[in-house]
Image 1 (tube, rainbow, N blue to C red):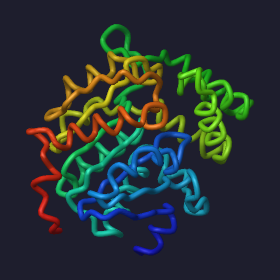
Image 2 (image 1 turned 90 degrees about the vertical axis):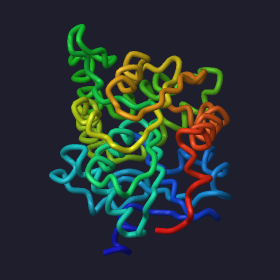
Image 3 (image 1 turned 120 degrees about the vertical axis):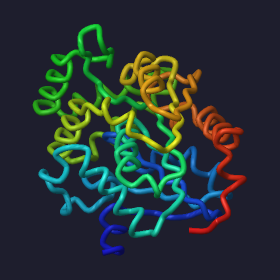
Length: 280
């Protein structure tokens, strides 16, 4: 079972520390997107990287439309990896939709996690009138999914620069577009549907594990109103608004991303690194 999970999710483990930092990629991405950030933590932590089934170099034959019909299937991927590696006291770092996946995992198995770090999180992408601003109207998402189905390559080339911003560094958008295009279009569309139609607002209050919300100053996918909502409705959360723009600060602004995470982990209220004794 353990080896099956390791191969299924293309799990990679490295680093000199005992406490695990589990990095979870966002939609259309893979573990390689963390390469600018992990070197700064590998001397102090055990770094765990993986690809969700259907992404990166995961085992595509393990993909099940039924299992991954909602975020719970991806949540189970995270919990399976924790079990396979016997991980405890996990610092979970999730980008975009992985923030909610990590939250669901911590709600289900809170004893496994010490801290959750959310990079560009959103509990709900679709606006609910004036009561909730998620950033998109329902028709926007319907059109996005329709375009994915009709012209996946065109969709990827259009959306990547919008998500990444930082137009002065086109290589970042090109990498994101290539990552989109390397994913099976049918699986990608299903994952997109699961992501953009999910609603985890009621799950926020269930979280018992302290968390950091990293909110970019200009993010089309997760605008400022979403970060504020997350902070207001998530017990034990800390909100940090970054100077970084776009939805992928771990790629476009890795230095700031590293600094914010490091500051949080060493703060008086979340002094994990100094108090952890290395025991499981």
